[in-house]
Image (tube, rainbow, N blue to C red; front, side):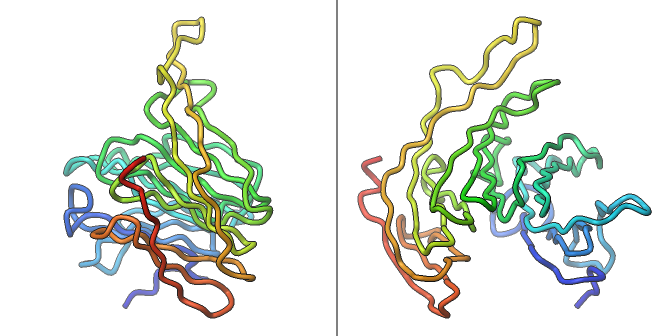
Amino acid sequence: SVKAHSSIVNCIDGVGGLNIGGGAPEIVTGSRDGCVRVWDPRQTAPVCSIEPAKGEDPRECWAVAFGNSFNDHERMVACGYDNGDLKMLDLRAQKLVWECNVNNGIVDIQFDRKDIEMNKLIVTTLESRFRIFDLRTYHPEEGYASLLKKSHKSTVWVGAHLPQNREVMMTLGGNGTLNLWKYCYPSKRREDDGKGNPRGVVGSLELLNSKRFSEQPIVSFDWSMDKPGLCSMCSLDQQVRVAIVTKLNKL
């Protein structure tokens, strides 16, 4: 075991090993102390650390995710904070490459795939909102194109892409509902901004189904890697539920 942070560890993610992304296995943790640290499980010291500036009031990190791990060298970490800050760290270059603010505290982040070049990122927040970022085209002034959606009439706790189809995703709400979405790509994913710079074009989301499972918030969810549509979830009514989504092969 390792003393990773000076306060509670709010979030954790992993990559590498078990054919999930290229390169060595690594773990990333985010904490109430405002620090995000990347770990090699064979060592007791962090590989790298994102920390608040000296004298700065630290913001809690609520969400972390690995992505862009398509070979043995490339790897990104996305971090979400309680004040809505979203930051992306390039682990190969060891630098912060992009940041923005989504106006609400970020409770979950997920790349649509960890083991491909960055494609899409889902960011779920307080105040019934979540965003989809198209990560294929970066604009020097506007950053990445994004789509904002309101859903669940409460905190959107989790966004989870279907392993067998990255354009299908599930969101979990504080009102006990699960919403199933399909992302539809635009006719073209980039355009010229009139100044010679490429600008990303975001697609659209189609709500496929919605079902209420609990009177309490559903705060954890996972898809089966082997059986398409099989999933499990946990809610604050102390229940673990197993469900299956059918007809996903027709999407």
